[in-house]
Length: 185
Image (cartoon, rainbow, N blue to C red; front, side, top):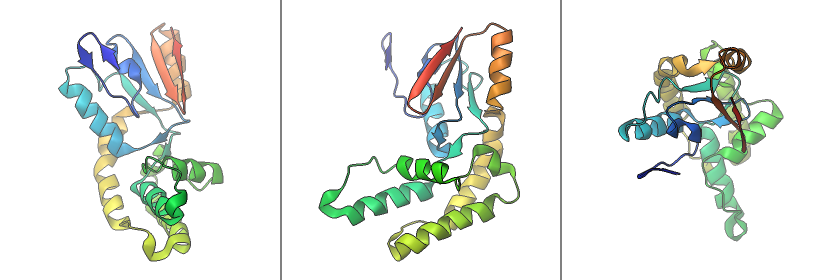
């Protein structure tokens, strides 16, 4: 996306961040990758996007997209051989599958004491299917998530309450969810 002479690349973050007057919400339909979130924020900040950290909010109900999902995506593609479907190998499909199967974890789950146990169960399920073909470290992922947990906290909102507040204050908000967006003014 280009604004003036500057070019921005948006994958997870809403494109409304390019406009300094718009607040942005990553809605609950998104499968949310914490790594990608902070990498994109850093890139936008380095390009001088104003108040980028103040204008981005994440629904507590977003499902998480883990390195586990990316590993499953890559393993599944390898197993298909010549019949590969050509995924990005970012784990979007497996994340959506976890969401649909109701065994996925949401952003808010990071802050519950059962989080690691639930992630371990998800991992065990994939291990039963893929065995040693699955190239993934549960311990590395948990360590990374522990490090991100407090860093992520200021961005998390109850999306329904947040949108009501924005509407009451008559502010502009760009809401992006899974393959869709909406501007509320």
